[in-house]
Length: 502
Image (cartoon, rainbow, N blue to C red):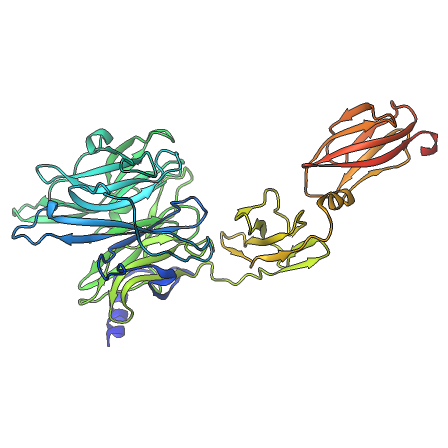
């Protein structure tokens, strides 16, 4: 019966499903994410994701209410929050989270709400927070900027207030959650607030007015400065008829930032997709408001909390995590996989001699060193010839933004790197009189070339382009050793110059 009600409800939404845009529920608390702590306390309200340790994968930040003091009249000071991290000890493609640990000892929670978003606002490679919201003596909401200045110790943040940000407070009774995203595609992070502003209507009743507020970053890459607030910008006025709590990310994989909002219809809680079809100048243009197949719908006795977007499986599209309490799937942090990049790519590798080759043709390639955990510079062809034994993988991009990575291939080098490079470099014609050409079939750059006579004296130094002819008619006849720099290696070839070259 419930499924029938949901289908009827969806038909009333008057929203179009997106072609090829679908999510699939994969389970709750996957990858060892912890909805509650090991002692069954501190239930999550939201999970954030950020590469806190700069190792290339996404770590989890779990936020919620620790406890509320048992007092007759609860004030903001009686609400105690927690923020804990789960380090990703897997990799970019295979997440696996350690158990919860405090983000830091004695985190400086505000007196007010604690709803953070995370991003590097000043390009110092340390994550900062925008927090909604501290409250002043009149209970107005103040947006706070936690500027990270250290990753250890008790004093890790500079606190920058609403006044210093030159952003107005929101009146008492309002509620907003923040997001950091480059909305206008100018290279820095802007602030987008979603929630409601408290107002008095014409009859004197207090109402909640659904609103997006936008603050444009007009500062520099190292010193943010915000201009705002702008209500319901870029076409968002057409999407506001119910309260929305939102997250931001490139949901449809078209290289701009869309919005995924938690809202309500009658007694149902639903997620809607506000699609950004950006303008030629990069400014957002929200002109399509849709539901998405596969995302949850909560009924009267069920709960959904604001979602998070992250590419948790490294396939190039944004997946959804959401704290939920649903009859069908239970209570926990639900994971909904984005199926845009669910196409199976043949990411297998074959070996021929000392050369590794991706078996799939017609895509983009990036070879990867599994031992160091890093991309191999310049190794972007379908084939790759390692210069040492180790474990290697190849990352494939299907030219639509979707990625796949192979399993790590155990490669054993049967010859020395010098031998391999030497076999890939040749000099011709030999013997010669007038010129020679260096043929470089390696993936390393050709550098300086030194001609030495049989006494070891340097006679000529050149740095030609690939396959460029090198003039030798100006050299005396005789035997030469030609030292060729290829990448970090030096290859020596013998050359005869003289009449025998005619």
